[in-house]
Length: 452
Image 1 (cartoon, rainbow, N blue to C red):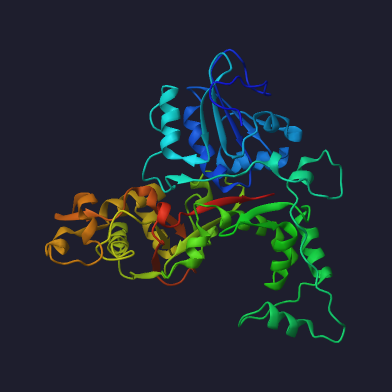
Image 2: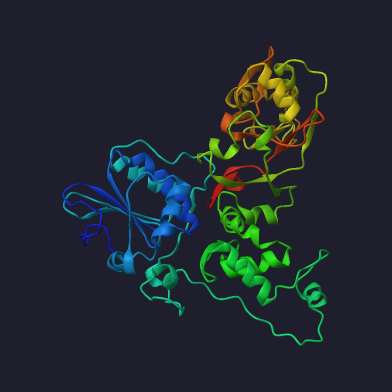
């Protein structure tokens, strides 16, 4: 790999004569997905050139999903990657006006990113408590991967470098019952649809994607989830071909390191993936718009949810009364005396939303009200000999006053509260759903667009 002090070779998109930050990445690398959005903050301080090791469609999807705001070039035939020889991605090279490398950052490292920002005259860009880990290693650079033998033009990098292993085939005798075989070898208590070649091919045809294309790497061992393997699993789960429009985006969301599916699957907590929205009954913009996508796009969001806490409020005539009931329920998320470390999903039923809309509450005003009024009374912590959960972190809590009583604020910021309208149109039952912690020790909500 090119080291500090060395002169860099010519790179498409890089303008010699002034400082630049060259960023090598690949779209399906979880660490790249975490790292690159941080660099948007530096685009006015230094010339940034992203160098993608993937094809144009994959790269454009990556840019759109993560909101990348700086120029990105395609490393066709991986010529630039071979010249720089990064051993893993993301790899960042800060280059001075003479074309010499001044600083390198490999993988995701908050301390190094902040030092890089300081080197270009910018304030820190990677806060300590923003939900991302302090450090995470990257993925092997594509120029070090062996070329896969696949059909098609070998110059097509999408096929040459992003081709995973084909799914295995198991020949069975005609006398064998396919359902019984699948139940015995692949099933649990639920029925399993036999993933025959014909059924899997129908799913593949509906996807419009190459069978061997790698959609994501699945934690904890980061095996490759190809389109074909997703299709086979979808058949076994009873999906119909029309669902293949959604499943690749869903798999990408599941494998996003911020969601942390490894932790969600392994924790002894009550977390399970969830989320759907009744947009037709909502007066507000959909959740995916609030999370940065265009209104006309379809999207999938995932949230590692605790069991719901019901908010039954049938007699409230004012929006404030209703929201106070929700706020008091929010105070119990995770544990009654634990604060600051969680996200929560507030599911408002259509009838409750009508009450809020009549009183003029917008989505942002609802969130702000719930943030300001969700707290735990300070008097709950007066017994210093009490070692119950939440007592140990009191020094980090923020004290506020809620309806005249000193309280510790339950949530770190309004952004830790997510609002959706869901459920039927009869019955004034809303719900509060806590998260499995948040940040590097837990899971964050993620949203991915579904291709048109």
